[in-house]
Length: 268
Picture (tube, rainbow, N blue to C red):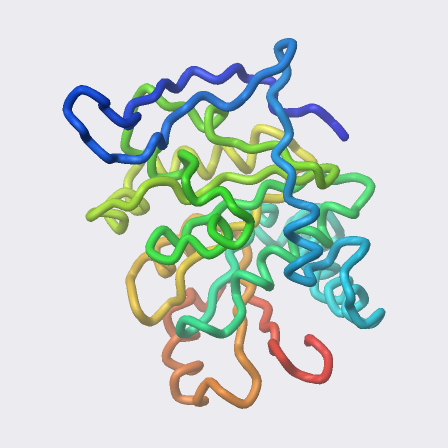
């Protein structure tokens, strides 16, 4: 595994439980464990197997991997290949949907896992759905600092919240703490600068954002303006066409957008 996250942790226990006052706020800001100067690896492989995600040991139909290979090829081409000149910020990819429950988080995680199998790229999966924190909860790190904390606290750097995993070439950023002004944080200049730095720091990196659905909140629409590509997930046979059409109108017409029909005979 390539060790590309070399920045040393600087965060402290800003929200640790205060035993003197009895404050029950969870210990949200403990420093990541560091061994011999190297950040410890977060183990998620076993959990991914339990969830039947795209890792060895899962009980998946053999065609499942091919479905995601078909999904990722045009995304990779727009990011690094023949069509890259046509797509600005093509290595920044938002995964969203019309409404909750269509499978966007499963899609984002499996897409990240499939991308991480590429020989020439590394992957950073960012949980931007702060209300649901689907990726963070699903993989067991919802109590760790993340994106919101970087945006809100000047003393926390993005390197402080990146988690190395036991999946080669895959790192994660949790959603972080709940916040009453998530929309304002995501639309801030700091967020724009942060996303830009994520995309430019390593020329081989793909950043996948697990965003909120488009229709319930304005946050996903904000995120579409920060990325180069959008993966739009539709649950086959469930989401009404008018709902899908309303959501698609919220994505800029010139945005490189791919549609994934989830829970169909084959993903498309």
